[in-house]
Image (cartoon, rainbow, N blue to C red; front, side, top):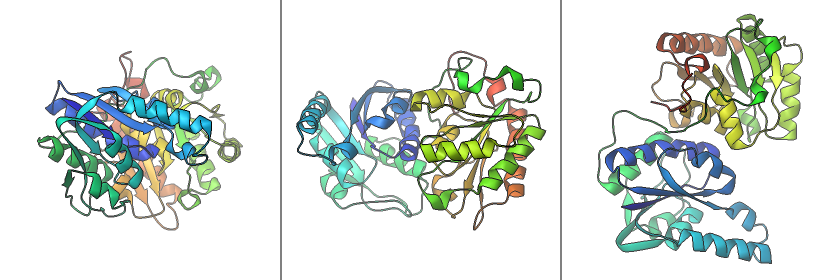
Length: 353
């Protein structure tokens, strides 16, 4: 059976679709699973266990110059790659016009079907063409987590029950972390390893105050943790440098590609971050993690039922004390269960179980 997953963006949404792939692998171990995704997120999907072929598109960029010769050539190449196979099931997990168009463009096997969402769920986006294109539209509970949404659509489309256990299947090398995470001078002062502070987000209203980050970093240093500060833009790099000021054990990482950044995060003892794609990667890597929310939306995108991962919500933003207490709780839980970078010594990769 050949299955095509259509989940184009964004980073967090792509991560949230990965457990559905692992469910399919469990229910249909002989299935071939391909995935269409925006090119910027393709390196991450290539790390998702069980994905046979990643078909990269650049709809965001193509829309900026739709009639240029470069765009026309790139579109022809993408279309040829997409239509190279005939699929028994094309499953649109995004529910937008752009994903519906890609689903419609994909070729079906003689008895194949297109599947998608029947309606919008609370807090998520949905556009009517997604319903029109689908041969079978899946009805969902209106109030459901983003991970559960994808898992349910795939299960109903392919005729199996959603498993009780969940895995993201996101693989990253261990013991081969990026040099950005290594600073021998910090080992004596910070014997508990690195905690990455994911401060960057595309939305200003999701940010945590700069002084809160610095205060949290000081507490981590005092407790034997070094602080790692990733960034993905010039403004985020400036913020990372400001957080690092005054911290005894802190390193601003170089700007890393998505796959290299995933590897670097995998070497950490844990992550504290705002609601962002990198925080969701930390969840998928099964790291001890605290996720910060200025809005009451953790029920839809936050960590699910794991003692070593939790969300903290408050308005206008969580306090340093609340986040610190959450970190102490997840760190203690991780120590009791053997999770965290110190426990991951096998070279086979990291998978959330």
